[in-house]
Image (cartoon, rainbow, N blue to C red):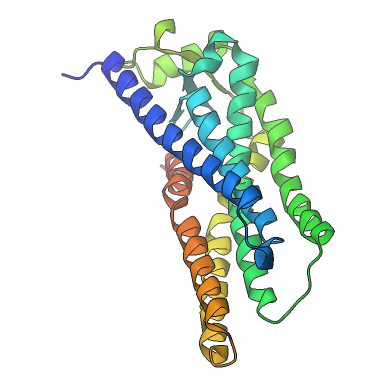
Length: 270
């Protein structure tokens, strides 16, 4: 029979493998965008850098916190068991780390929309300056930034959440050796509601928009392929493949957000 300690070790290995691979790949992407970007798409490299930094930071923070979220049906609270490096620095460090992690996920989904929209508009020779691109990135980043600086304030110490988690999950091992136990005891707090909505609600409409824009890009490329040079067509196709891959890979991560909301709503309705 698998023990909690064995499961914790399995999850730790999984965090290290996936987080490590993600960090390395995003570092490679960042270096390529900075030093190897062809001149015709030099401006677009700003969006690639934005992607690489956001996703790379998400991977690093995932390893740093190693979080297990425990939603509770019929409870206005949820527990978090953090077994990463952050546990050696205390509650505030882990809470801030988790808040930053969530904000990278939400900014990543907005970055997808920005990148696909950019590729679509440049097909019509729309001119973008560096300042305009940075302004758009910062504008879309602000909601995520607001989430990052407010969500962490809702976490309570072990002494407050322990009686709740023991009542709801009596079979779980909440020994301090399993990680730093914290949680949120009031899911109706404005900053909690904002964080949950901002992390989950935009996902479906943004993904729908992304694949609509992708369809439009393909349509324009097919229509104008006779007037494009072979080099231009190849460049657009390659960028489209990269963007599509970037759109598909985070889907599993965002799916876990929907599972959490489903647990909370399902419990509240039962």
